[in-house]
Image 1 (cartoon, rainbow, N blue to C red):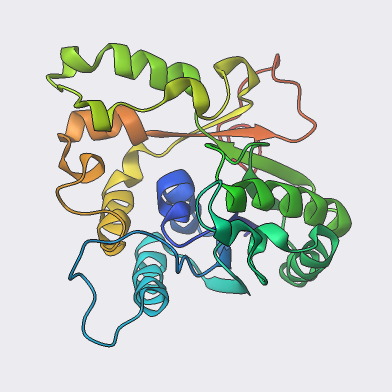
Image 2 (cartoon, rainbow, N blue to C red):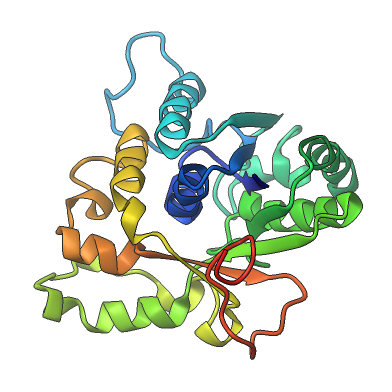
Length: 264
């Protein structure tokens, strides 16, 4: 049994980006550990969604607990930094925000956890955090430094396959999907091009778990959202593979199929 640690910025990021991989590893008998940097307390949510007296951080913590149970997460640790908000917001510079946190300090804390768990695989995000969110960029910086401090043997940047997403967007009509302007992804601003991908994990057998974990994050992912309302075949085309760039790997070599090694 191996241990894989996944580092994410906010609750629901784990499901959207790596949920299928987590569910697959757990089903295969491996230990899956999730670390979140913040509680996601600055996320947007529908008016009237919260109960009287309920705060978003508490709600998202309960949602994350439910998602972890669905995905087979053995342990979750919240580092407790403040949600920095979207890029350009004044909250980016608020005292205690993750964006303002000293990278070395946070990385040292995370490295201690990686050592405690004996992590054999570790994931953070790509250099621009997938889509430029300050907390996601900081996850990359802190995560890569922590992995180096802890000497984790297999280190990955979870990402979006921009080339794949571009193809899907161009083929939307073939799936019978009409993309409203607000649902059309800013493809050129997301993830990395396919020629950088080193690892493509087939999670098609775990899409049920991924979809249920998305539903668990109801404050952020409404049942009527594009993510959950698309037909099963489109959902599989979008989410059936999860993409990574392994640190130090040659992207010109064979594409790996697991975080634990080719064919593992």
